[in-house]
Amino acid sequence: MQLTILGNGSGGPFQGRHYTAQVLQVENRLFLIDCGEGTQMQMYRFQVRYDRLEQIFVSHLHGDHVFGLVGLLTSWCLKKRTNPLHIYSPPGMEELVETNLRLCGVRVPVTYPIHFHVVEATAFDRVFDDTLLEVFSVPLSHRGVACCGWLFREKIRPRNLRPEKITEYDIPYSLLPGIKAGQDLVLPGGQIVPNDELTLPPRAPLSYAFCSDTAPSDQVAEWVKGVDFLYHEATFLSEHTAEADLSGHSTAAQAAEIARKAGAKRLLLGHFSGRYADTAAHLAEARAIFPNTEAAEEGKTYEIAAAG
Amino acid sequence: MQLTILGNGSGGPFQGRHYTAQVLQVENRLFLIDCGEGTQMQMYRFQVRYDRLEQIFVSHLHGDHVFGLVGLLTSWCLKKRTNPLHIYSPPGMEELVETNLRLCGVRVPVTYPIHFHVVEATAFDRVFDDTLLEVFSVPLSHRGVACCGWLFREKIRPRNLRPEKITEYDIPYSLLPGIKAGQDLVLPGGQIVPNDELTLPPRAPLSYAFCSDTAPSDQVAEWVKGVDFLYHEATFLSEHTAEADLSGHSTAAQAAEIARKAGAKRLLLGHFSGRYADTAAHLAEARAIFPNTEAAEEGKTYEIAAAG
Image 1 (spheres, rainbow over the protein chains, first blue to last red):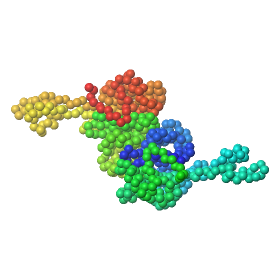
Image 2 (image 1 turned 90 degrees about the vertical axis):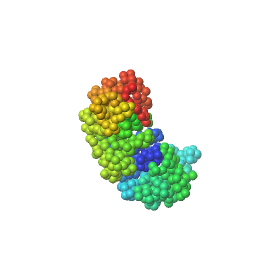
Image 3 (image 1 turned 135 degrees about the horizontal axis):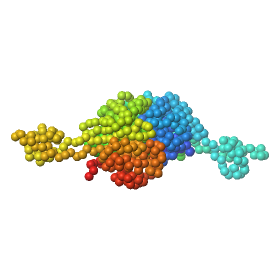
Image 4 (image 1 turned 90 degrees about the horizontal axis):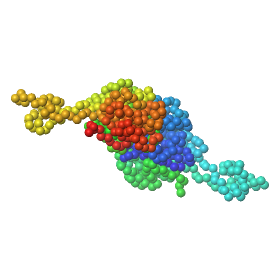
């Protein structure tokens, strides 16, 4: 699992920061999370192969998380994209996209199917499921706006064959999938070789949680319990806690507290207010509570691995 | 007059180019022309003081010319802008803006008045007029889409007083505005001093024409006759003339031909297709027809002055 940050800012285009957007790679699959204005330019700039995207998860319909979407959809029309696209978001997205396309001269239906998946953002629910992973909606607390974090959780992977055992027992090719799935081997003479002699356990499934925009929520910490990598917004510093409360955002200290309560392995802060020229104070504030904290850097790719 | 290019590309975010947007400065006034995705980031990047903008002219409702507008309007809400904004564009803009604001949680009415001026893009008409300049709509030919170029024309400026004559005739302060406006001076004894002894002629009014997106049009050349600085789209090279025809765009050679027919003083090419890595061939092609040609560079400010 790899996470590439495309934008780490909030509000206006201050300090040269871009709007929220991230690309999560799981094996050869890409998932776009949020799509603020300029996302397609950032993907081009950081050489993300975004034509392969088939799922977009949008946390909420605020401009700094969504105003890059229609441009991206339109660029795909120009490229005559045909592979289907799935957009997961709180209500309103279909009207937003259709109005923009209709008024801006894009021939509808577009060259590829767009499937809108409405996520009500009121329950922790599985909203996506394939052979590699599951994605869950994580209702956030953002001024009463329908707003949804996302928990990406790899499925348990097949066991790893021990090559020397394949040779030793001369195992027929047709039996290998069953053995990877956990079956024992029955030899021609009826003798049973237990699976754990033939295979090694798979690596632990990894998980990533995206939580933005939100006030701190113990319920969110509960839902993302034990997550390997937690992105939590930290729009403000503690000195601006009152402003964070008022606007439904979090401080760096509050984000760190959530990471601690969730028992997360690592914390990544982002969605920084334009009033802060850098993120040094955010890091200091969070690390005092949760040492394994980083501040999201645009263009940087974070490897998500099992805790060593 | 100064023109700053914010984006010189068309289509997708290829070659690192940005979408069409320009800022025209006339004395202390700023005018934004088109507003593709990322315009507010480009203005921030190139240090355009965009909070002063009160007029935006949008040529047509295609994404690469308009998808940055709602983000900019929203950022101004966050900054609690109060000064009025005027948006000039073909029909559809009000619905586009209002739908985006409504669905994206922006409190409407916003913190400042937005006046939508619908320009039908069917006639050469004066659409804006103040003490400094007039702006005219220039109907373009872009696949039947309502699409409008803009001609900015300074008004004739007051004559320049000759300081030594003010001293010589000891002219009362109250008479100076009249003399700048062309009046003669009547001395106490009844003797008349003609205005052209007291003043020097003002500099010639300058003009700038923005023509994008469009197929080449002799009518357009007629409307912008004698313009000091002509921006004309040159999406393609001559080798792709068929594609230019089909898509309602121009080649560099066609743009140069329009500049020649218009008797423009200088030509600026832009809206380059992402298939071209640089603009050397566009320049060569255009300069063979119209030598005084430049290729728009992002972040560059072009001084528009009377031909020397």
